[in-house]
Length: 384
Image: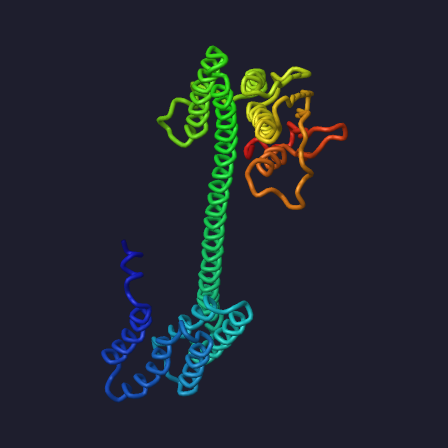
């Protein structure tokens, strides 16, 4: 509470307290015949302290000059304490050179004062006492300056840390938005493409083969429910009260067989081959593999004619997972610029998160291929 109330008082009020007390002391303690000289010298010593925070060295010079005049006039005053206050202020607000200069001046004044006013044969005792006082005032000022600089450095560091944390939070939000965008694109694009293909097949077969049309529509319904489940799972991590993310773990390599069956039902026969065990592959890496295969097959389903076949090869090793998706359908050449959609750019981002480079383009023997290799020790699971 004392510190809080002190901070509310303007600094000028504290600076004026000592001059007022010294002047009151002179008025009440000195006789009338000595009062004019004592009051004038006291004012010369004390009043410059009102500006000591604005110009510490100039105020110190004025106080030291007044003290030298006092010494020349052979007048002893309690206002000599103003010299110590001016020394403290100079040490607290200036550098090492200013502090040493001011301390040397005050120490010289202590020698002159002891030479003139010390009792006979007692020079050493008052000189040591005054020197200790001078050193104490200078050291106190230096400590205040050091503490102020330390607090300023700590505050600056705290501000930089707060700014860094804010930037990290913004980056985390941007990465999360990008992740959700990729997930929603993969889920919506894939399932809508499958549902459209199944619906077209049902319309075509409704008169010739009602049973096949019914099976296709049931598959549409199942695909829609799966899409809703995937969306709830992907968005469920944003809500604490959403249990779907825990009830339905993210898809991985084990679900690629069901994905291949789904694509076959939509009109894209797909052959899947998984080499090596995938139990050691992290769940986030398996989700990346699944999304890469899903997006590649969805593009094949949308951009190739009927009769196209697709093959998926997943090679699992101790430190990496290779993904190779190829189809037999004709494709146009790659455009000169990067596509503006989210498909291939999103696949590149997923592969890059695990140190992989996505290669997309027509195959030498015909068809289209998507190939990459994910490095499991690349540390990119957080952004996958």
